[in-house]
Length: 262
Image 1 (spheres, rainbow, N blue to C red):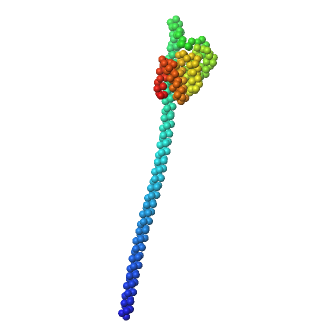
Image 2 (spheres, rainbow, N blue to C red):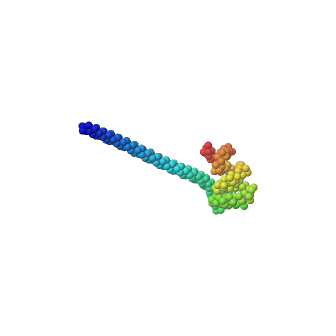
Image 3 (cartoon, helix red, strand yellow):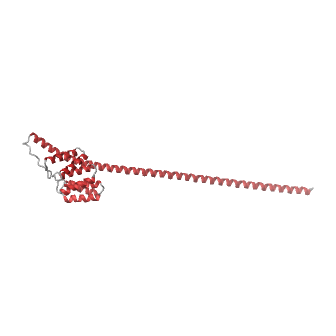
C-alpha cells in the first residue's frame, strides 16, 4: 500500500513537471511569433516609406521637367520678342532715314516752288535760280524727271521706280540720269529691293563719280549691305566712302556707322 502511494506521488510529480515544461515551451513560442510579427510590421512600414520616397522623387522629377520646359518656352518667347524688337528698331531706323531724305527733298522743292511763285508774280524781280550741278536738262527731260520725283515724294515708291526706270531708258545720256539712278535706288531701298538698289547706286558711281549725289549713293550701298547682313562688304564700302569723299556729310555719317560695326 505504501509502495503504491509512493508510486502515485512520483507519477503525479512527473506529470506536473511535464505539464510545466509544456507550458514553458508554449510561452516561448508565442514570444517568438510576436517578435516575427513585429519584424514583419517594421519591414512593411520600411517598404511603404521607401515606396513613398520613390513616388515623391518621381513626382519631383516630373515637376522639375515641367519647370525646365516652361523655362525653355519662356526663353523662346524672349528670343522671339528680342527679334521683333530688333526688327522694329531696323524698321524705325529705315523710316527715319526716309523721313530725313523726304524732308530735305521737301525743303528743296519748297524753295523752287517759292521762286516759281515769285517769278510768276513779277518776272523781272526774280532771276531764274541756277540749276544744281550736273542737273541741267532740256524742258521735256526735266518734266519727266520732275514727274517721277513727285511720285517718289508722294510715297509711291513702286510708281517712282517705274518713272525713273523709264526716264533712264528714254534719256540715257541726260545730265539728270545720275540723279534718276540715285532716286531709283532710294525707291528700291524703300521697298527692300536691296540688290537692285545697289546695282543702280553703283551705276551712278561708275557713270558720274564726281556727282553731288555720289557720296550719298556710296553710303546707301553700305546701308543696303547692312540690311543684307553683309557686314564685311558694308565696312569696306564705308571705309572707301570716308577715303574717297572725306569732306562730305555722307562720310561723317559713314564714320559713325563704321564705329557701330566694329
